[in-house]
Image 1 (cartoon, rainbow, N blue to C red):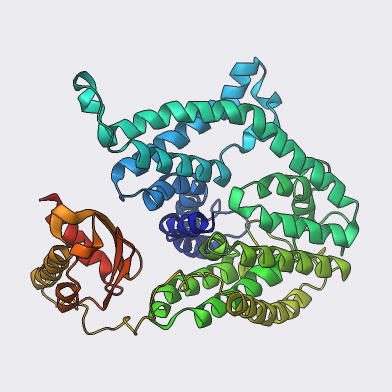
Image 2 (image 1 turned 90 degrees about the vertical axis):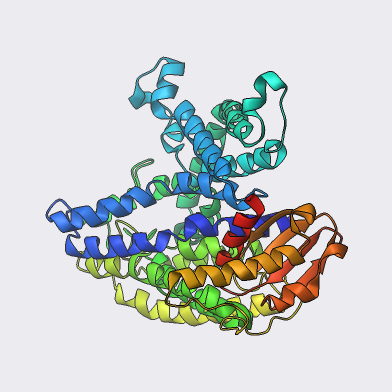
Length: 492
């Protein structure tokens, strides 16, 4: 299970990599037209709408990206199948469809089915499709149906399995959603402690997308709280209205960037250059706009224990802010932009204290994360399972550098790829190969047939033999170009 979660975490890198650009688009557009969200400025409208195109379709990105990351071969058929599967489930369970099945008006559709387009569904479909791809991508059908054999069979199987998944969710999803609503109603009665419990579950449910159910209870008018709407309307009680939002600012603006710094400092030397840019981009996104997914998805599946710690710290932050009645609000998320503008609302109460509290949480997150990572050897970005100690390959002389002439660069990588391919035993021995941040991961028929000397002479930093059928060739950050060239050779 642990190995699967780590592999799932790595598969998140593909869809998560695009999220930092959303924070840039929102940050600029939102600052240009904070009140109108583009209604008062054409440039802001274009930037915000472009960002919404990504953020509103995060579930779809996961449904497409996870099958690519989890499948044995990073093939387009896996991505296409993920897209098909998600569209089928979403179309079968959206509000219009439920209204048709139950012969009711769309406005009377249960709230659960208005929230069916969520990350949980995207992840569920992605995992299902990855299994189907690995199971059926090499299946041969009878001659009469041979056109649909192999990879073409996967999208077909996906559609039928997605229908079955939708049938199950039709009965299960409302129960799950209803339980979360009931939980939220009970939390309200606990005051500041309840705000802390809400903060804990809000983060804990992020990986599934089910946090939206809790948010509907506290931020909007599901049961009459309307914390978000009342804050911006300057209604309610000062120091109370906004209590379910204020405590997020120290976490998103300061805590998570502190966690990012801890993960960078504890990353292995040869991986720091690779993960540093991702962590920096995620930290900036969290601080400026409050968009935390680029950071959280980097470690939530690699290290579930660390994510649990993050959820606990979030709960503590909300409880403290609510107890001292330090409040602020947001319309998008708890970042710098929202803090600046919400501080101008008269009902905000001592929002500057959230900044002071945030500085404390920056240090708290840094030292707590660093302690847990080192104490329990947690697999955060840059600390994934390794079998030997790396040398510093971020700027390794063995990896070919790209000359200014494009053709020369291709020749260098092609030559390196050819020698490595031959060293692995060629087409007769290679079953499959893929790459991660710095290495080629291969499955072969027999590792005894690998010529390690030839591979190292080709420019590889090292080669790791893992049993009879698996090997890893350490290349460095330019590994993608070598693997691309190997695919050309393998497919020839």
